[in-house]
Amino acid sequence: MHRMKLKNVAKTLFLFSKHVKSAKRFRIPITVIVYIMLSMSDIVFNVFLLRYIVENYNSGLHFEIFLYIMFGVLLFQIVVWMLEAYYNEYYAEDSIQKVELYLKNVLYHKVDNISMEEFKKSHFYDKYFFVVENLKERIKGYFSLIEVLVSSLMMIVTLTGFIFITDPVLIFFILLPLVGEWLISPSLTKFISLKTKEVSNVERRLEYVERVMYLKQYSKEIRTTKVKHIILKTMDRFFLDMKYNIQYYGRKIGIRHFVIQYLFQGVAFFGILFYLVFRVKSGNVAIENAVVIVTTFNQTVFSFKNIMDLYITSVEQCEYLKDIMYFIGMYEDSSCETIEYVAVPKIIEKIEFKNVSFKYPNQEIYALRNINFEVKRGQKVAIIGANGAGKTTIMNLICRIYTPIEGEILINGININKFNFQEYKQRISLVRQHFVVFATTLEKNVLLREATNSEDRKRFVQAVKKSGFYDKYIQLSKGFKTIVTKEFDEEGESFSGGELQKIAIARTMAADADLMLLDEPSSALDPISEDKLITSLFDHVDDKLLFIVSHNMSYAKKSDVILFFENGKLMEIGCHDDLIQRDSNYSKYFKLQASYFK
Image 1 (cartoon, rainbow, N blue to C red):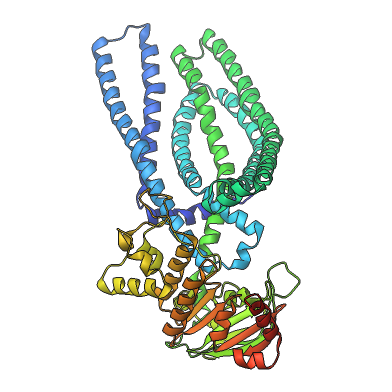
Image 2 (cartoon, rainbow, N blue to C red; image 1 turned 90 degrees about the vertical axis):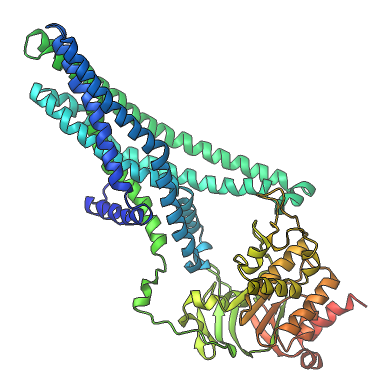
């Protein structure tokens, strides 16, 4: 990794600086100015003022001149202190936060365009998690590179020049620890990078265990089953993995740090000390110059060391920055330069599956095999079948969460992959079996925005009526401003599982999309609420194309079209009465469920 060409490092840092500039325009030049001032402060105190005092001590200090000098230095230092305090305590933190917010907005917007196939890959997910989790620290690291570069160059130019003029031989003692640094740092950087990645992977898994122990959706299972013991044992194993990584890499890193920081630097420091005593005693070096050199020796060495480390640190930093820019550039709309998207039809008249086959990443068995059907606007389509038959996969393909590996899906005769994804998804509303609500207001959960006018409020009320949530809604003192869950607000409302599902369904109703996809939409509802929902759905979507995945045959019975799946194959298609008369597999499936209610 440390062999990355300097040209590539500079290019990566330059490209990242563009994103920094977009978020905080003057952050980089202000950092340069501040650290020039801080370096000048060190030089004034440690070189010029110290040398002046020692040089004039024996000959007698002129007190009045000395006071003028000290007053000027103090004024300069006060200005520097004020600048440093403002920069460190406010400006730096504020700008880091703005850059972080800007980059996270970009990264999170990119999630829409990252396929689920990628997120199914553990390596990809680890990489994405690592980027997001470490973003703030890496932004700090980027600015730290600039700070170190500016301050180190200032110190090197001043202190090395002073030392060289005093006695060129002294440069040898400065170079000695740098040779050790150059020889050992590549392997040191390698182990630090490996440790960071290994620990990050374990931390991500550990975070999952910790989430299970405190998130609400797991709380009942934790308290009513023995799964807690399994979780705690898993946590113990992760901590052992963490301990192993720390011990394994800690020894390798620690030994190298010792050799660099103590052995080489210790030998060099004592070497220069003995040499200067000899040169001062022989009258070849002035005492005041010797004092300045001894006092600033470590500072000079560390400035050189920082410059050397800067390249290696920059390489390690660039590996991370490349990952950030990889995700930022993923599925970039620059692909539009070669692909001209087709406009999504204003009215979706029909959707057709044509020889569609699909299997999930790293799976040999097909989830769907050679699927063919056509359904039209205004039809209610029930997708029926046993667990694992391929029902939810049909929904995922329509939503373009996944892409068929064979065949195509057509809307009005156009392949859906020819549509701009951002435009296409506006025409779809979806409720998943494992629905989600968000810790925000009811209006934002349903409308996915604030209700800013009477039209929005009307849409909200109509949606909660259609979903069956209206009776609960009118009991809420804060109405659509009610906070859902108490996670961030004690005045939030805790709803039952059925009520939360109605909120999720209301979100679909409010979207008023041409394609409505409902996956087990009533799994958390009681029979009365479920019956009302079925009636509402089938009475209010005459101008839509409605797909429903459900094990409840009530949906199938009222649907215009039934797609019956077995083992990834579309076995039967038709309406309820036709399939019952055929004594089909669907008929047996229906009669089996109906037998439990006799």
